[in-house]
Image (tube, rainbow, N blue to C red):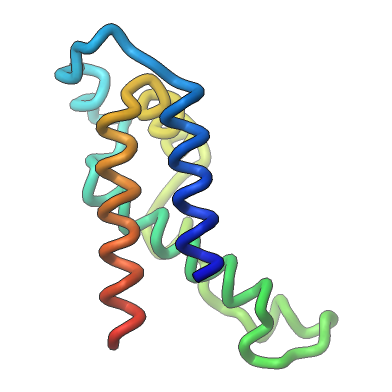
Length: 116
């Protein structure tokens, strides 16, 4: 529930804080340097799972053993560079409608993971 609330809050912040001229078809979103929506959603879902697993300490590890206990890295697993991620965030922040669609997909992915 906390995860869903956090994602919705972030989505609302981005939607309210950003705008465009109504033109939702953008060559920027099609750039080879920007993640496609489905890949972006998978990365964000993996990041949410990793962050919450770490924050909730689901393995019940002592703080000193966090690095060795939590071996997942969404950036590495999705072959993501910081530059490409930052570029993707920057471009999607200009198109809140598309950004919202990505986060709706993130919620669907997380709900599917929850039922597995």
